[in-house]
Length: 219
Image 1 (spheres, rainbow, N blue to C red):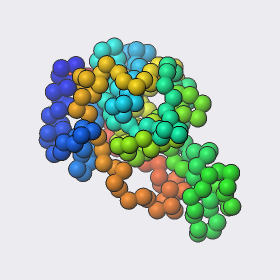
Image 2: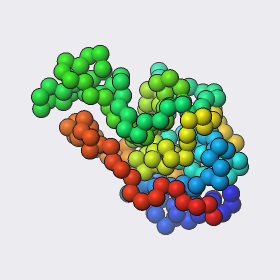
Image 3: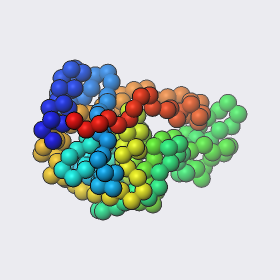
Image 4: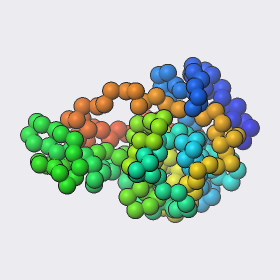
């Protein structure tokens, strides 16, 4: 674990991160290292709601550490013990999305679409409870989702590669890792990016294939 932390901090310094009350924020590009497990059956996921952090572990060895966006008070992320039971790489929401009328694309809830409904993209979907999952999306520094756990676009495919059906997930207010490997967690600033055009969001182009290997060998 010590070598993982040193590698993690060295990458942060080299990338040019700035400090803030909620941890460092990347100025331009956010990425984290993900390691191949020795035994995929031993992978487990721990989520800290207070630290807004996801820890993918194999025993006491971290395979992936990343920031996450959590549910709003009126739509909280559920806590407890779960298991991944459904994975869909190119998932779209069945509740929130867009109403498409010709060239007019309007955000709406699924039941209020006046034209063709196209769900909001939720790439790299890993469901841990009915209608709740990890997926790609903007990682806001404040509770923002409808209960799902959003991961940065560079992180979500790595998480997807690490977990499988049956992988245990523990979601709690805090985790022991918060005071160690999660203490200076790197956080993206993608929530500041302009919203993509609605036409892009309803297209297949929104589901990008990751470049290069997702997981590397453990040191």
